Image (tube, rainbow, N blue to C red; front, top):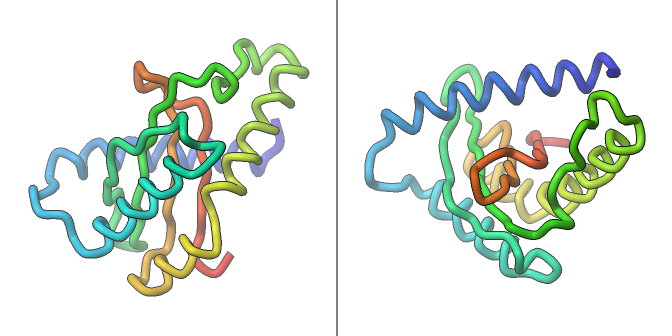
Length: 145
C-alpha cells in the first residue's frame, strides 16, 4: 500500500474515533454550519445517480486544532459496496480505489468548498456506509484544495 494511502487511512481512523466521542458530547441544537452541511448532504443524496444514498448524520469531529465535520451516508446499492478481499486481491483493490475516487469527486464539490470557506471549516469527510454501518468508501475535502 502506498505511503499516502496508509497516512490517509490512519487519519480516517483517528477521525472516526474522535467522531464517536464528539457524538457523545453533542448538543441537541445543530449549529448553523451543521444545518448548511445537512442541506448539502441531503441535496447530494437526492441528486442522480446518488438517489440510492441517504444522509443520516452530520457530526462535528474536531474543533481544535482544525474544524472538521463528517457527513455520514448509508446505502443499500450493491454497485456502491466495496469489493471484498481487497487487501489480497489487486483487482478488488483497484475496483475499490476507483469507487472511492468517484465518491470523492461527487462529494468534494465547489459548493462544499464554498460552505467550508463561509464557516471557516478545514476538513469535511463523507463516509458512505452499508445499511449495517460498515464504511464502504470515504471522501475527504480539505479547505483550499
